[in-house]
Structures are given as structure tokens and as C-alpha cells.
Length: 110
Image (cartoon, rainbow, N blue to C red):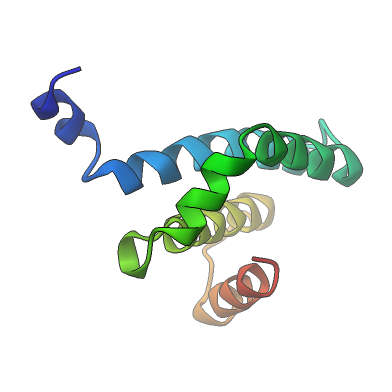
């Protein structure tokens, strides 16, 4: 892959790392939210992914910071996913108070 092709899709390598993690976890999260998996299996699936690439993820957490950090990018995506699930289940818009609850919940579980 050439540099221009890469940068058409990702701002930098940290964005790619976050995208890889988010896409794997999103699949598990959505399966859980749709009732295809119970929470025990969802947690187990997440642990298996993290364990399989343990050194990679430890390095990503240790060597990134700020708004491009692995934590910030994955946390932001967690908020988006949870907010979308709540909106779809309630068939209405997400008000500011509920969005604050979502952000608080994801912060406490990250």
C-alpha cells in the first residue's frame, strides 16, 4: 500500500490501530445488543481478542497519548455505539442528559 492510499483512509498509524480494535469489538458489541450473544460470551470474546494480541495492545496503550491516543479513539467509538443502540431501541433522539449518562457509563467501564 502506498502512503497516499493509506492517508486517504487514516490520519495516522494510531487511527489505524484504533480502527482495528474498534472493528473487532464493534462486531461483538452489536451481537450482544441484538441478543445474538449473552454478556458472558461477549466478554469472553473480547478477552480472547485482547489476549491473542496482548503485546500489540499493551504497546498501543503505553505509547499513545492525547486526542490521537488509543484510549481516546476507542472510548469515543464506545460512546457512539452505545448511544446508537439506545436511540434505536427508544426510537427517538438522544437528549443531552441521556448522552451525559452514556459518556459517564463508558468512562466508568473503560
